[in-house]
Length: 306
Image 1 (cartoon, rainbow, N blue to C red):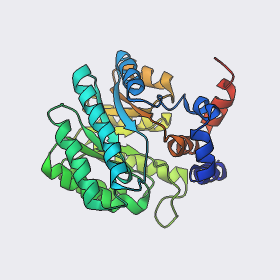
Image 2: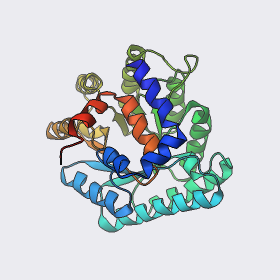
Image 3: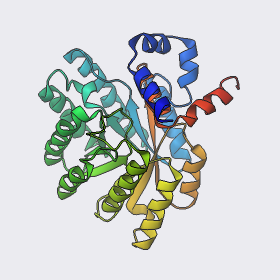
């Protein structure tokens, strides 16, 4: 499995394969389970369906590493449309943004100004902006930027922390001191062993340690996992410490373990589904396969079914 994961992550950076996949009907069929279409209307329809099952949604317009300020503006415009639609349609939803899609590689101040406008827009719309975490080379800059945004507009912005990074405990301590909401996940990028735990068992142990810190913090956080052992550990810890199910939420990906999503809702837990959409879906899709290679088997079984 570690070898397969490395291969899939390497393929996620292959520009030729990406170009073929994103522009072919075959690629569209392959991605449809995990990507909610290409348009704003399609993702809004998916969010409405998710809400109808008693779950919240996070909407993500796929894309990263833009090449010009104009591309960053175009990406941000999609998010402004989403925020307007969330308010107008009264969806139980928020948005997730990658800083490289907002121009971080071009100019960090461009990214800050672009995302600050989204956060200011989210406040009167009564929604929230989650800043996604990318590779470890962006971790420090992402956390610094989120802290600046939170100081500007408290309770309307949060961040993602990856349990496989050694530094995540210290990062969580800093963020909690400011009351910043965190989405805890394991991490889906290929990182060197001097930066991240190379063994899954160590990642799992760190995930549980960090989850326990978050649940006891008094701040509302998201525990993002499809791993039933991690879910069981979270539920057990919450019950032992008298932490009510409405004091945190589980977060899962669109099209992954729908049975588990609905069973958690039936048990009284809050669940949020992360719903990606757009034409630039290939890197996200390949990282999802790398994160859970069993999805390859799922695709093989269901590819020829209608």
